[in-house]
Each structure stands twice: as structure tokens, then as C-alpha cells.
Amino acid sequence: MPKMKKWMLNDEWLSECRNSELKEFIQGKFSIEDPVYVNNSENALQIDLTRYYFFRKRISVAVQVFKDLLGDGDFLFCEYGSIGLSDLKRYVIGRPNKINCIEYQTANPDIEYSYSNISYVRVSGNRFRFRKYARDVLFRKNFANSYYFIDLDRQRVVRMYDDRGMDILCDKELRKTLYEKYCNIISYFYRKDIQKSIYGDENKKE
Image 1 (cartoon, one colour):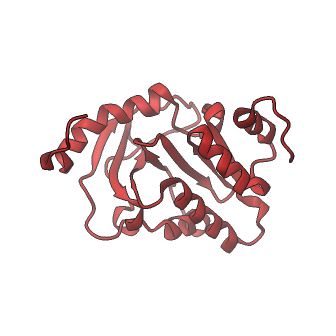
Image 2: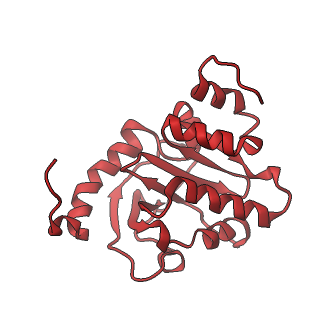
């Protein structure tokens, strides 16, 4: 593998390199748009936050899920149907990296975006305000939540679709870890399918 050069780390190189990679990831290998779990059920799981009555607990769990999936590493903070990121300064600490934009046509007839684009920025986990974002999903009025968190390098996606829950896409080993950690709040509706995707035909206790 060739050694990374300094110029490869600048935003211009990353944008050229990542645009085609992102397109292939969200519309080729997977289908990364709502409903994320349904579109990628063999590689995903769904967390049901409604198991917690208090919103404060839902926020805390959501933040922990983001940390478990993304950690402090780099990921792409994406806004679907947008040219530019509406809440970039609200969520990203410090000076943000360059915003990139790709063309995107939704395959979901129930979704209408203002623009046929996805805007995204490279962010590190320790510079993103996950708690503020989760609070906005639960409490912010007229919040157009079209945000997806995508880690291309590790092939992971987190989508907090609303105050009810989160869809997660990741490899089988991590899905197993998350299933066992959040077993009590795995979606009841999809639980058996999620179990099968992780354990196959093995018997797994509820």
C-alpha cells in the first residue's frame, strides 16, 4: 500500500476521492436512505428508544450508540436533499472541513427533498456535538432531520430517524456486540430477523 502523502490529507484530495466512493456506498453496495433497516435488513439492526419513557434516557442511549459506532474517528456528516449543511456550526466544534456535494435521486416515492443532492463534511467524533443533535431530534420544533452519519472506511451508518429509534448498519461482529449490549431495546418487530442475520439458525435467548 503506498504511503500517504501530506497533500493527500487536504480537503480537495479527499473530496475528489470520496465523492464516487460515497455514491457507490449509498446506492450501490447498500441503500442508505429511509427506511435504512428495511432497505438493508441483512446488514443492519434497529434500536427502539420508546422502551424508555423519559426523553433524557433516550438522549443518553442515543449518544452512547453514536459513540459505540463512530468513536473519535472520522466520519461523514451527511444531509440529504440539501445544498450545504443547515446546522454545520451548531453541531461541529471548531472550524469545519470543506463541504462537498453529490447528486442524489431518492428511490423512495414517499420522500420529497428540496434538492437532488447530498451535502457532507468530514468530521471527527470528538468534534461533534452528538448530545445536542439527539436533543434536537427529540425537542427541536420544525426540525428537518435529513442527517445520516456514514463511516466509509469501516462501512458503518447511523440514522436517528426520529425520537422513536435508530437504524444502524455495520459488520456482523459489531452487530453481535451491539445486539448483546442493547438487547432489551432491540426492535421487537424485527428482533427475530435481526437474530437470524447475526446468529443464523442458532437458538438465541430473548
